[in-house]
Length: 124
Image 1 (tube, rainbow, N blue to C red):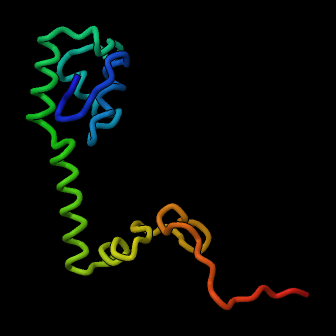
Image 2 (image 1 turned 180 degrees about the vertical axis):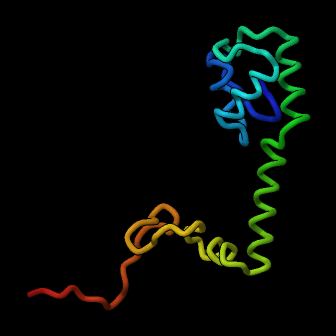
């Protein structure tokens, strides 16, 4: 099944399957189920056609998800880079944006360690 351009697994519980949509986490998935009065523990393949239509229309009307949300996030990042704010400079330099330490960590964000040419190890 597809909702808002994302594939949803059929054999999982509805509340878990909704988290496969970019922009919907577990809390929001539970809220959606409560608003539509659908049991959270029901499997996706057990939903009726009417429930699927209601679910699809509710998500598309109420929330920004998938492509729209991804585009909005990228636009916000590009704006920060353009105005050269601190977060924009961190994005541009591909460093952690939200104040994390970089002295000994941040390998995921910084990439593989590059050796410094000409630096020799001190031996005693």
